[in-house]
Length: 115
Length: 109
Image (tube, rainbow over all chains, first blue to last red; front, top):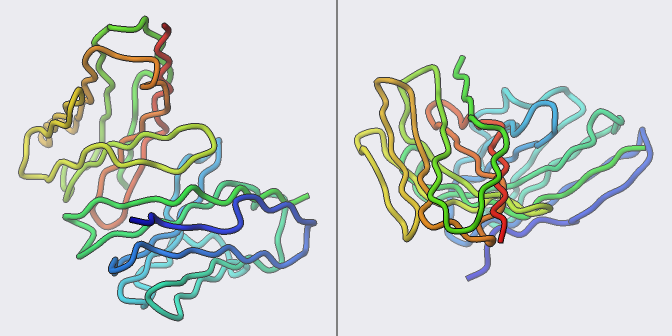
C-alpha cells in the first residue's frame, strides 16, 4: 500500500525563483495537510484540505505561499517568489474520515534550500 | 494558544533499558494525542494515537498514556533496542495539530 508521496525530495534554487512542491495522498484519504519543519520553529501546520477544499490556511506565512488541490489525488504548495527564510523541510500528510479520530500519515518530505 | 513541551530534549540509554518520554500540553480540550517517530531525513511515522476519552494505548513494546486533566502524556518504551534510536514527537489535535519539539533518543548497543 503506497504511502503519501512527495516530490521532489530535495530542491535547491535561487532566491526569487518559483518553487512548486507536490503531494499525492494515500488513496481514499479525504484530508490533506501541508506542514513546514525548521529547527527554530519545529513542525507547523500551513494549510489543510477536506475533500479538495481548503479549510484552514491560517498557518500560511505570507501571500507568497499558495496551495491547491485540483483533485483527490494531487496537491501542490507553491512559493513565489522564494526567499532564503523559506528554507525548511515541507511535509504533506493525509488522513481518512476526519481529523479528530484518525491518525495522520506523513510523506518523507521535501527539503527546500533557497540560496 | 496550545503549547506542547517535550522533556527531555535528548536522551541516551544503553540497550535493554526501559524508558519514558514525556509530553505536556497547556490546553486540555483536545480531540486526541498522537506519538510519532522521525528518522533522520524521513517523514513522521505514527506510533500511537490516543483519543481524548482513552487513558492509554499499547503497540508491542510501546505504551502511551494520557492524562488530559493534568495535560500530560508519556510514551513508555520497554526493552529498548538500537533500532529505536530516532526523534519522538507528540502532537495534540484540536482546532489544528500542535507538535512538540521532540525528544532525540539514542540507544547504545
